[in-house]
Length: 344
Image (tube, rainbow, N blue to C red; front, side):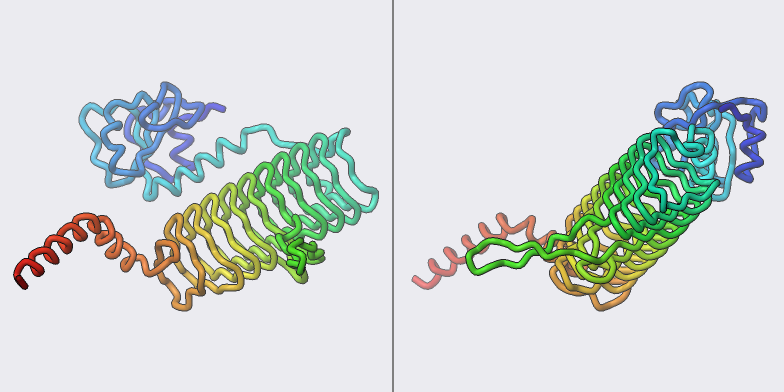
């Protein structure tokens, strides 16, 4: 794909400084650049590369003060990151996508696949499945019986959608995610062994959800595990049975949520955060990476940190003291010796 600065300016609602005819064919990082690429400057700590980048076009904020020796053509926009999202999607549209039904796909006779949908190589579609308009199913996907998938979804290679999973519109599921596997549920018997609890529920992914690679979402024991509208889950996230994650919450890699926990709307969860089961987390809660929640968060907008997690500011103050404990111990020990000597 090749596109000129003046064409990009129209797509991104940008103003041009430099050669409007310069052509690029790929995006690049500003510190690497390369002739025929477009890079961007969205963080001030990278401004030092503005003079040295070899990118042909540089996407910058309207207020950016360009150094005199800058070489790339500049495209000025109101919001660099929003423009980058549009730009990358434009490049993505040129990539090869599945079309039609592959001859190597196995599709049950009772499955219903919209005419505008695509099912790629070696994908298996089970009985009573429904696949909506313009949905793209890539290679080696398994879709179990009674799964429904809405319109404009993207199901990438290796995804497993287990029996009864319900997926809304415009959902993206990245490679090797498993949706609807059995939850971790057992009865601990008197002899110390475990008896498996059969899980007969399902998983519901509402509209505009995005699920990262190798993420697993367990089916409910009874009822549904629910990922609400607009939720974004990173790679390697584990969601237990009967969990509910409410609208527009984002959760970073390796976070884990135990069964029957309810996480509110607009929460931001850092990587490797852990949630015990059967707790509730209020809307707009912010959980720092590697924090562990053993109890519910009742107040909206709370920021927490640590394990077990406490208020973010409390943790920072406590940690500043913790780092000084060896020195404080020595000082206290010396004071004790001084007090003892004064008693004599």
